[in-house]
Length: 93
Image (cartoon, rainbow, N blue to C red; front, top):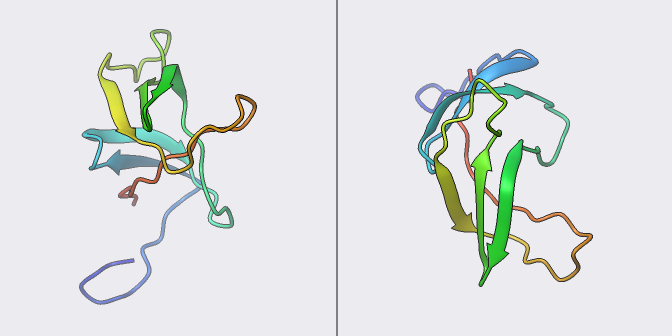
């Protein structure tokens, strides 16, 4: 939504998005407007003391930067079969 005039921003099913809190810009994404959450391609994922560390994409991707991400976990891992979650804002459109 455009914060100035409160009109919705029209986006497509595929967009380049920014993760300002993580320092990534123009990351290719598929948009699902009916979803409560989204997934992200992460590699070399580690979790310790409430922090999640990972790389966006992997070395085979043209979008891989080699920049390690370290962020708080929204839902800590109680069971190794449960997916970890982080909460981050994105800019799209």
